[in-house]
Image 1 (tube, rainbow, N blue to C red):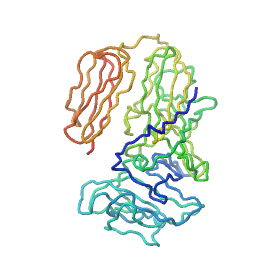
Image 2: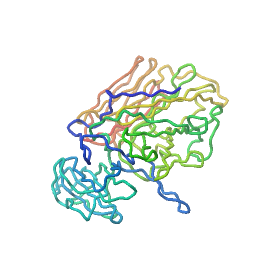
Image 3: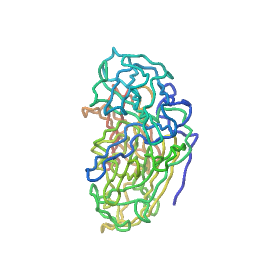
Image 4: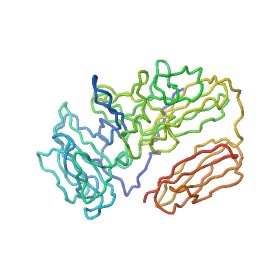
Length: 446
């Protein structure tokens, strides 16, 4: 089963129109080819050097066959950083949204690979949206590029070169407009003649037959995305999708795992967590360099939210809890503009466990918690039947700050508004019939 879904009118919009930004290279109102995406697996080490993978923490806006192109500010701001992390090719400007007299944590934009030998903006300069800020350094190989990222830091200046302390906080493609990409991601076979791979939880090179799954299982999917505008190199055109999510149904249609975010490249990236998301062993070998782009996602390493964290490795499909029968595994890869590809594969569990009916109020839509406007949150989930539901929200100190539901709910989709008292990370806990518990995080920033 394979289908490609294109939702041109249902684009993913994570930044309000007031916060939208243009592209940093001319034409400022057109999609450009990208040589790397936010969250791509990257590793430019070659034998005999040991592997040193990391997340690509920006988007590389490519200028094929055009050298020294002018770079433009995408927003009003002040230059808080100018320097290099590594030799002449890696000079960069950090332009903060907030003026230099503010020393707390603030957000801004990173423009890397600026030519230090040509005119450029300097530390302390104020820039307006669309202003010229410098020129791309000649990169060689037939292309130049601007490494472009959304960052934050503290201090009157952000000058801690070469060891910068910037946080890489948001995928620029969730902010940049226009969004005219109509090309859906591609889901590839993870193994020969096999759409997905199934590995023992948190173990390398310990794969199972798809018709004999036992115990705690990691599901691995292979996928890539394209922007719809080519760099001229088919390998470089392979980018990380914005999101990969999954669902599992029993052969009779009963949902045993509702649609759950496996990985979403929207928020902060920390390089040390790359192996939480990407599989890189002898069977499913993720690669990201000039010659190879292969992305294998451990989609079960998740707690269902969009934040990538080390605790996500506790996620898996516990096949011993669902009974021995046939199941369909569904995987969907999406880009930031709403184009999506859906694929599926039939599997079977063999744990020596009889099939049992789940609680009547089985979760039919995953628990989700998102910030809407201001400091308001929306919490939603769906149940396939009636049951006793308790829904509570906890603050960062573990205290209950809201008891949104504590009683019997009927089948269907349920939505609850929540007004957190302050910014921070809140934990939403849903319990069904006193024994099935689901958690989600609500990140509130204003």
